[in-house]
Image (cartoon, rainbow, N blue to C red):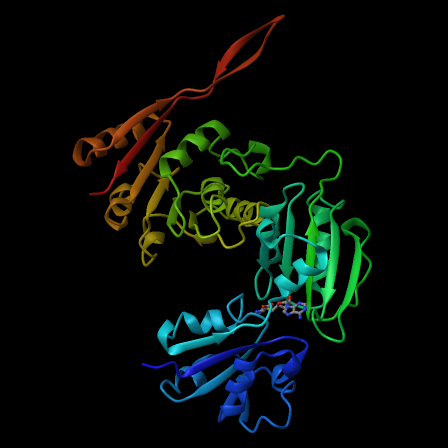
Length: 400
Ligand SMILES: C[S@@+](CC[C@H](N)C(=O)[O-])C[C@H]1O[C@@H](n2cnc3c(N)ncnc32)[C@H](O)[C@@H]1O
């Protein structure tokens, strides 16, 4: 099918800023769909019917018109967190023509003199701000698309709370238009409450004295987590994550998630990694909620309930970690049954009973067993000695 849908990116400079192809598309269109703010930018010479998006927002009116010529207006580059990106998930590429204008990120990089390939681009549009906590590396440059005029102040508070109040913020309002305005300041001293809804925040991340910046590798310090002792400790956690081997786009079930550390580090490995934390204990569920936000993966999904019942209906995973409940009847069998072919199952055991469950599993299904003993040097009188943690038996099995 020929392209029937043209998505025109329009900037704050309106129709005057459009290129020839975009003007031509709009002049020839019978109908233009867009946000009222964008439709209002079109001059009278555009005779097309102007249709605002429905509220609540839905692509349905456009998708229902498949095959009939239609124009959609979007802000900046429609493919950057825009309606073009949403449409491209539903409409085949050969049916779609996208005519981008410079994105807000490109305009911000131009104003700040920041090479675009060196910045991290984040969107808080209808998304939790806590995702920023995963990007607080001193020296990092972030461009954050704002949800509304309150975003810069909330972002400043988040930075202060995380120990990054020394970060420099630049708020850029209405980039590329006559109302363009720039506000600069430190997160710790941020006072501008009144900011235009259309704004983008540039952040130069800087840590306050005494703030410990977290690494990008797994095996975060134990005290990075709020927990009640139900935590896979740092060294064993790093080994466990290495065996789980997260890859972009994969889904993990963290069964008996405790404080959520395995699922959290799985998701920190790549923005496209997803995890379900299955936990029955209400206190630990609260820890998971806190830790996922504090460590920058608010998208980690908590499944409140007890396995195996709680596993019912969950999407099939690429990897499963069983940190707790391996001896509960049905848990291991259910996990193995639901794992995708080629998926990895990793389970850690401390007690003789859980270990023998893993040994029996291996006899039936194959896999490898690894014994992990970690000892720390600690004082013994005037000297030091090795104090061993309980040895762990780790099962790793790949489903045929
Ligand atoms: C849904 S995203 C769309 C981004 C758009 N596709 C682009 O290319 O910039 C909307 C967010 O982008 C940012 N934004 C878009 N245009 C902007 C502008 N002209 N000035 C400042 N920020 C802008 C704001 O943070 C706004 O909330």
